[in-house]
Amino acid sequence: MSETRKTAIIIGSGIGGLSLGIRLQAAGYDTTIVEALDKPGGRAYVRQQDGFTFDMGPTVLTVPHFIEELFALERDEPGLDALDFPDEILPKTAHATELRIREGWSSGPRTHEYVKIRPILPFYRIYFDDGTYFDYDGDPESTRRQIEAIEPADLEGYERFHRDARAIFERGFLELGYTYFGDPWSMIKVIPDLFKLDAVRSLFGFTARYFKSDKLRQVFSFETLLIGGNPLRVPAIYAMIHFVEKTWGIHFAMGGTGALVDGFVRKYEELGGTMRYDASVDEILIEKRTAKGVRLHTGEELHADLVVSNADYATTYMKLIDKKHRTWNPDWKVKALRYSMSLVVIYFGFEKREGETLDLQHHNIILGPRYEELLTDIFDRKKLADDFSQYLHIPTLTDPSLAPEGHHAAYTLIPVPHNGSGLNWDEIGEGFVDKVLGMLDDEGFIPGLRERVVTKSFITPDYFEGKLQAYLGNAFGVEPRLEHSAWFRPHNRSEDITNLYLVGASAQPGAGTPSVMMSAKMTCRAIVEDHGVQAEKPERSEISEPAAAK
Ligand SMILES: Cc1cc2nc3c(=O)[nH]c(=O)nc-3n(C[C@H](O)[C@H](O)[C@H](O)COP(=O)(O)OP(=O)(O)OC[C@H]3O[C@@H](n4cnc5c(N)ncnc54)[C@H](O)[C@@H]3O)c2cc1C
Image (cartoon, rainbow, N blue to C red; front, side, top):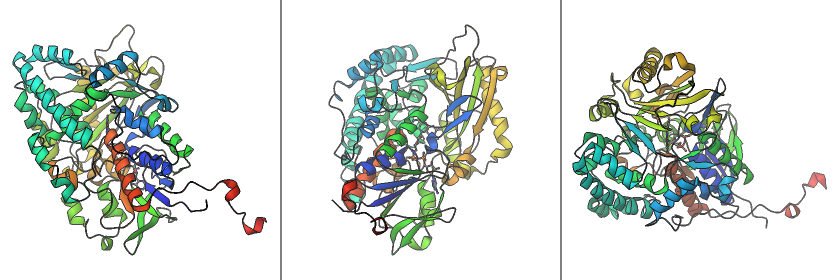
C-alpha cells in the first residue's frame, strides 16, 4: 500500500476539536491540532492554583456513551454509522441509569483505560430564593414527592410534561440528533414534526403550560443556561435535556474534566495525531477559494489538504479569513447573529471545618429573587443587575484529591451579559466577585467563607474574548434560539471555502460537551463524504529508503 494519506489541520483543542482529531485519525487522516493556549481543553482548560485543581469550564457530563464511543475508536474504524445509541435506551433507560448509579458504574471498558467516570446524585440541588430547595435526581418517585410538597396541583402537569418531553427527546435527540442541516430541505422536512411536538415555542413557555408554580417552571427550564440558552428564548426542543439527563444520568470525571481532556489527548496521540500548543492561528490560507493551511502568529505556515476550525464561528470568519473570500459569511451577517451570554466564574479554595457537613451538593443552582426579569437583563438589556443567580460546583465532595488535605475546591459561575454590554470588568470585576462570595457566606451556604478562603481567582467576559478568542466574549458560541436552529445555525462545512470545516459549540448542533462530540461526528462524516476514508499508513518495510541513505 503506498497511497498517501490526506492531511488535516484543526484549529483549537476544545472538546469538539479533540473529538474530531480522534475521529479523523481513526479515519486515516494525518491530523495536527494547533492550539493557541499552552494546554488543551479550551473552555475545559484546567487551572492549577496554590495546590488546588480547578476545572475552568464544563463539569456536568451527560451522555457518557458518547465518550465511550470515542475511546473505543481504532484505526480504520471511524465509527460514523447512524446513532450508535446502546440497545437498552428505551424503554429500559430509567432502569439502566438506576443500575449505573447504584453500582457506581459508568465508564465502559475502553474508557476505563483513560479516565474514570462516575455518576453523581442528585443531579442538581436547586435552591430557591426563600431558602427551600429541590433535589433533582431523575427518579420519578422522588420528583413527584418534591413537586407535591411545592404545588400538589402540578403533579398532573408533571405527568404530562414527562410524556411530552419524552416525545421531544425521542424525535429530537434519538432520531434527529445527528441530522446535519446543510441545506434548507433537510430542515423543511422536520418542521411539521416540531410543530406537532410543540417544540418551537420557548422552553419557559412550554414549561408554563404544565406547571403553575414559578419554582417548578424554573426547575424544568434552567438547564439550557449551562449551554448558553436563555430559557425564555430557546425553543422547547431543548426540553430534551431533561430527558437526556434522566436517561443517562449526570457524571463526573474523577480528577476533574481535565482528566477527560487528558484522556482524549492520549487517545488522539496513540492514534498518531500531533498536538501543537502556543500555536495561535492568524490566518487560514486560501487559494482559489480552497483552504490550503494556516499561518501562525509566529509567521510559520502549515499546509494541509483540509482545515477545520474549532474556534469561535465569528472569529473564524471575521478574523481568520480575508473578507474577499466570503460571500456566504460576510461581516454584516456574522454580526447579525446573536451570541450567547458570558460568565463570571470564580475559582476558590476554602478550609474545611472540623465536624462540618456542608449543606450543599456537588452541583448546586442558587436562584436569585428574579428569574424572567434577570434573564432579560442578561440577554436582552445587557445590564449587570444587582441580583444574580449562580451555579456552585464543589467537586471535592466527590473527589477530595482536587484540593490539599483539609480543604475544598469550588467554583461558582454567574451568567452575565457578553461584552456587547460595554461593562468595564477591570473596574467592576473585583467588587462583583466580593459580592458573590459575600452572599454565599451571609446566606449560610458556606458559613464564614470570607475567613476560610485560602485561594481565589476569577474570569470575566474579557477572558472569553481575549484568551479564548470568542467574539464579544461569548461563553457558548452562537446563542441557541429558534432563528439560529437547524439550517440557520452556522454550517459544519463552509459554503465559502472548499475544504474548510467547522466543529464545536458555534457549529451544529450546538454547545455543551455532548453536543460538541456530536458536532465532531457530523463534521467527520462531511469530511469523509468529501474525501473518503484514508488508506492506512504504509508498513515500515513498504517505505522506500531515501536515496541518500542507500
Ligand atoms: C464555565 C463553563 C461551564 C460549562 N459547563 C458545562 C457543563 O457543565 N456541561 C456541558 O456539557 N457544557 C458546559 N459548558 C459548555 C462546554 O464547555 C462547551 O460548549 C464546550 O466545551 C466547547 O467546546 P468546543 O469544542 O466548542 O471548543 P472550545 O472549548 O471553545 O475550544 C476552542 C479552542 O480553540 C482555541 N482557539 C481559538 N482561536 C484560536 C486560534 N486563532 N488559533 C488556535 N487556537 C484557537 C481556543 O484556545 C480553545 O482552546 C460550559 C462552558 C463554560 C464556559
